[in-house]
Amino acid sequence: MTEQGESLGVQPELRRAAPGEGPDAYSRSSVDAARPAAPEPCAAGPDPSEHEAATPDAARDTPDVDAETNTAAAPATRDGHAADRDTRRGEADADAAEVADDSALATHDTVKIDLTQLAARETVKIDLAQLGARETVKIDVTRPVPREPLDDEIATMDTVLLPRGRPAGSLRPRGAPLPVAALVNTSWATLLVLGPLMLLTVAARAAEGAVDWGLSLRLVLAGWLLGHGVPVTVGVNGQLGTMELAPLALTAFALWRINRAGVHTTRAMGAQGSGSIRHAVLGTLAVALVYGCFGVLAAVLADGPGLFVTPWRAGLHLLALGAVGAAVGVLRSGGVLRRLARHTPVLLRDGIRAGVVAVLLVLAVGAGAVGLAVAMNGTRATHDLAGFSTGVLGQAGLVLLSLVYGPNFAVWAASYLLGPGFAAGTLPMTGLPVFAGVPTGPLQGLGWLLTVLPLLGGVAAAVLMARRRLRPRRTRLGDVLTPEPRWLRLSGSALTAGVVAGVLLAVAAYASGGALPVTGPVRTGPVVWQVAAMAALVVSLGGLLGVAGFWAVRGVRKETDGRPAVRTARQLVQ
Image (cartoon, rainbow, N blue to C red; front, top):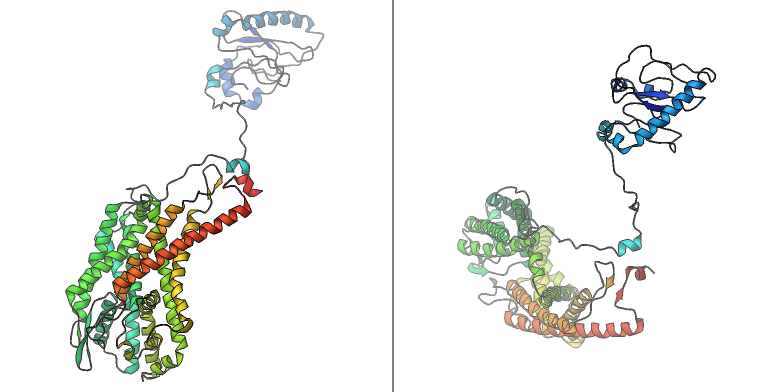
């Protein structure tokens, strides 16, 4: 490594220059008899530092070029310069002793370095100023070389639990303004519901003859409002009757679309995953207000001869349902639901989740019972369908209408299996095929076994809750930890699930019932408070039985297995 002076090749030793030649000037002396000697310079050459700056590295590394005189060195014979080499060798020894002195080193910019261990290189002249300007890297040889960790080492490393979602209050880049986003998203959700209804209505009207577009639009808007529970007054057999029985399938579809409108509005506000309650309230209110305005507008357009709708009531119903649907989407998308769940006690959180699962299972049991009843009375259902002389397209419409009211019948069947039953009145007189499965009295024979199904739904919900709470979890140290069961808390969650199930099934019972023009002012459907009480009792009892059964099975399995509750990752691999 050279910057000024001699190269890194095999160099002769350096001699201190005579006075007047400069502090950085050196002369050469031979140290080896076989090494060629350079002749004395004939003329004064340039300064060594300037010459080295202008000389390429390849030229400086050539042993046959004298850096001080810039002339080619002539080989010297051993006989002609023997005496001169002896004299200069003594002078070189004296100079080396002088250079080794610390005081001499402190007053000069060059240092003599012994490099005998580096390819027999003897001395190097180094310019400290240029050496300091180079880019160097300090290497710590005492530190071990990094390597990839092993699998067992990864499993035992310290880990950090990162928070899910965005920090509370932090927002993403905003999109459209809130009023514009709410208007666009709610409009799109409404059109996705009204579009299929318009196509079905036009197809049914076209099968009968010419299509009256104005009347078709009014019927579509009236059906859409009826799906939100808005009473519609129609003329039947020359008399006016009120239709309040909402098709819950259409209601569920509309709520799902409003839910998606709330999600897209949250994204437009930039509040997705932020956990901001303020933005959640603003998004919910914006979507609900727009949806309520759409309800008023639809009622104004649908109201007319033979079809009457109250605008203010339509606006109120759509405002309430729009707020419910949008709130679910906004809370989930904005991260508020997750934020609230973290601050909710475990007992209440498990109870709410188990109650929702129990309600879904009970409704599934009711839907299955309706399908079974219609299948067992298939002859009557076919006869009722053939009674409508509407052709193939009309019969397909009747089947579709029966499917739209399918969730209503599932709630009624669930109420029937729970015990309270429901009031049908003259409902079977409508002639729809689905009413062929409506029971006309109590269950007979082995049919009473079906009443056990709601209880089993509560048992299944409690077992799933206990299994989720007691499943093994991986800790930050890589160990698999099985939580210690707290049976009292699980029993409390089971009782809470019964209360939640009673409330939700009461809401479903109220939404599934209503008045029909053929039944007059008599309300069709189950009694709300009876359904709530029986559902809470049955699900709570089933939940306690499920927790007790899980405790018994767990105890038997633990005695036969004998495995420890805490197992390391290495034990799992083995």
